[in-house]
Image 1 (cartoon, rainbow, N blue to C red):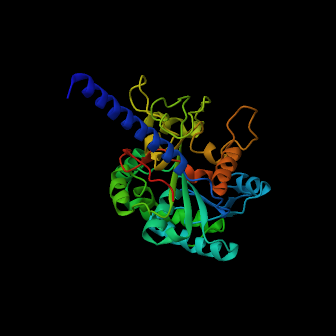
Image 2: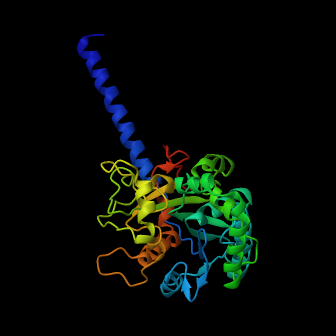
Image 3: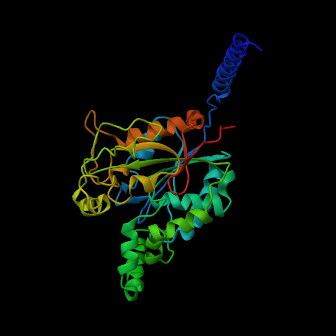
Length: 341
């Protein structure tokens, strides 16, 4: 074969490969699933020491009625505020059963704040609720634990645990909470970084459920790098930690002021990532649910109510299920997300 003939063959081969690549890309785009509406109820799950309402104040402050005003069916769960993940998950499962029966819907969209995300994962994976949950969205959940919980677990005075439990029981039962004996030490232990790896091994994701996550950031940090791998753009707004969370936010930020660790005052951004990481919100752990300053946001400021409404719209419309961002796995390592079927 002459040199010119060989060059012609090589060009033809390269052209064929390019055509094949373009064809595969086009087919992939065409195969991307169209939004399929999932008009299931939205279920809100609270975190550690949480409640349904307290002195007339909702845990998800003004979120349920805001979603209902925009056409969503909304249910609020209430589990033992100071219980272990397993204890809380079993109560959550019972309430999910009741919600499915009452609503007549085959499945629900779970949106969980903080420890509520671990409760939900346990209920789905270990208690078999994957057939009743279409999606789980976690907000500020310590999927890889929090060193703050490690510190409490290591340095607490164990003889005081029964006293703390009785104090928690009195507080909860007086306010009309679930009358299940508290386990304060167990609750905090389940939030610790030192136990998170074992939890993540024993509580794998259910393939029938789509997992999404949001992380919060405060201390005026934008979280460059750790917030940039989300589906949504990293917001320009920043958040200033309230006095109640300033000390813990500084501890989590670490000793190097030149390279602070982005966190929401209780949970780092990296710990909050699970499933499809949607991105960061400019809100500390309390502002994510509308506390402590229960006021309507100023124009241009981040609104927790609009955040929940916008995401509920994405879930119910089916647009959320078309996302193909990298899926987060234990340890924060990304892996390709399987195409939704």
